[in-house]
Length: 151
Image 1 (cartoon, rainbow, N blue to C red):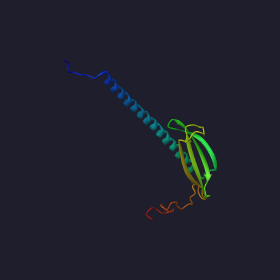
Image 2 (tube, rainbow, N blue to C red):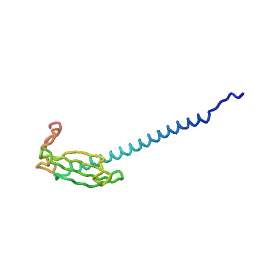
Image 3 (cartoon, rainbow, N blue to C red):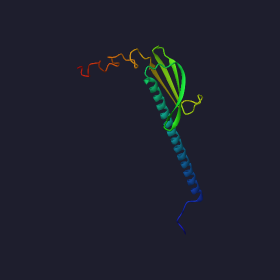
Image 4 (tube, rainbow, N blue to C red):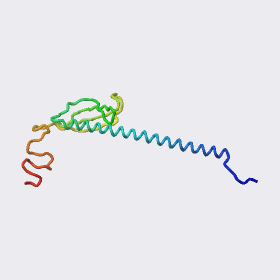
């Protein structure tokens, strides 16, 4: 009598079905991870585009933005990004609020990938940056003619 025993055909088919189900789940998780990585990459670049545009607006000499909408495009990371700015008045008359929205499509009906809000102060009399000669803004520097040790 032969005492060696192997797997039956039914046992082999059940094992293959379990393996196929597990592999399908693994492929699904991997695909979701890749899609999330792509989304996060796009969101990061869109946020950088918004930060760059807001920084450009803030650093223009004597710049006081008009209220309303503006738009344009810029290239970053080998892609074209479309930005829209909305400038509105604030309760403080010397400040304006700037909302920057960034999209991958020029269509305004498409939800923005990133939205950033910043504020710009009205330039003061004096130099283009609003500083009066000999006076620092922020209280950590010195007036003209001195150094950090007060000499």
